[in-house]
Amino acid sequence: MAGRVRAVLFTPSGHLLTIKRVRPGLAPYWVFPGGGIEPDDAGLEDALLREVREELGGTAVIDSIFHVDPEGAYFFLARIDTWDPALRTGPEFADPARGEYIIEEIPIDRLAEIDLRPEDVKLLVSRLDPRGRAD
Image 1 (cartoon, rainbow, N blue to C red):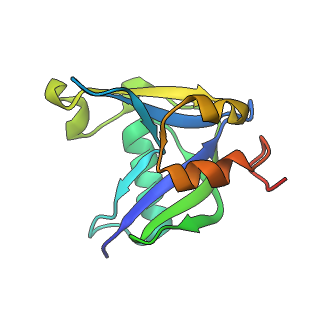
Image 2 (image 1 turned 180 degrees about the horizontal axis):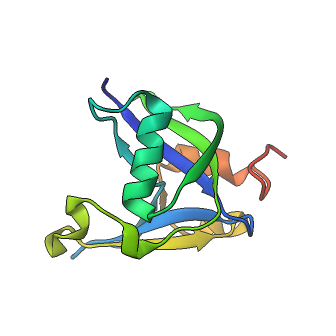
Image 3 (image 1 turned 45 degrees about the vertical axis):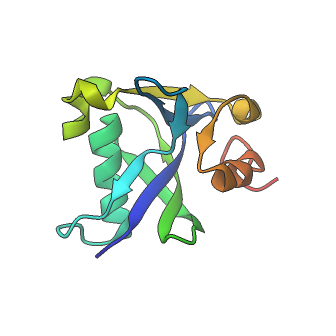
């Protein structure tokens, strides 16, 4: 199974849980947690739950598919109650040359202030209320 999955994750406070990417020589930017679908993943949701465990050290509760981009990335609306950076796994966290992966909660009304990628999904998310529902 090829493709990518991403989580539009809402915390109990109604904020988005994002990953701030800090790379040498580049301005910081933010991304939605997620990544590639692996051959052992039973499906899209299984891949997303695995990626959330790896990148955030937490467990998401998936609500629904939110958006599919033209490149075939699936964005899911989901919730997460707790996460622990100490439980993250993956080669990206062991390689300092890849930069930092900082977990950050961002209020929806502050999305305009950050470089959250991809921009088209950022715009769609900015129209949601803090519970992840369309206004």
